Image (cartoon, rainbow, N blue to C red; front, side, top):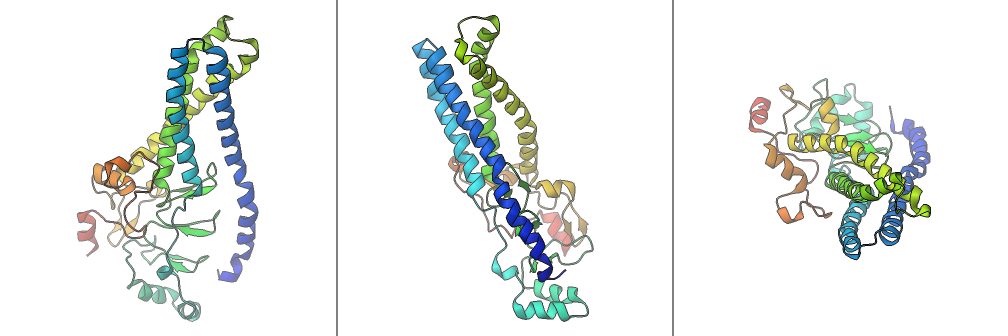
Length: 302
């Protein structure tokens, strides 16, 4: 495949990108409705005890704020893209295209780059669509039409790739989503029961209270499995792609090649400063293309 053969896929990507905002609109519409249903319909219209109302609203707003901020941080933050030194220059690209053995050209160029992982064929990983030597743990996203650093997956719900630059935000989004939906479900349960027993919930509030409880419960349950999986990946220092196919080093595939111990694995995503761990601010260490490996991997690679 040459660079000219990528035009069709780039056109499709341009068509997909605007359509990709549809799931984001849906999530934000549900969030806005949940705010209205909880604050106005549930708390203002149905919670009569002022202390209960005050406590509900005092805890609700921080949960809602953190949920929305982390969500938009995951959407708007770059997942991290391949820096310029990994791209082939025009001269190197010409050598690559005209060489009898293109892989020899790539191998020679890769000697100057911080690369320790290889392809399935034990050759230097090269991206034909982008014309670049792939950094460790990076992959080409067919939706974004770019190579993403430490790519985890492309998420339609944020219309963005999840990678080195926004993985922390994605995990925080999941955690605060669960906190938010669980809080809404538990505090609305009392009034959901009143609705079914035909007590004091106002008639014009019935559907809002009903759906508020069901939607928050449904989202909370569905998010737990995804959140648990990504906590496992974080503590194992793996990406979703690496959980299905182990990275390949000089000595062969090694599913624990980047394993540094659970706490150090956690810090590879959240950083060393504890006060930043649960805040939607960037604290992921490194540059996105050079990663520490466990000592046994280094020894086996020599």
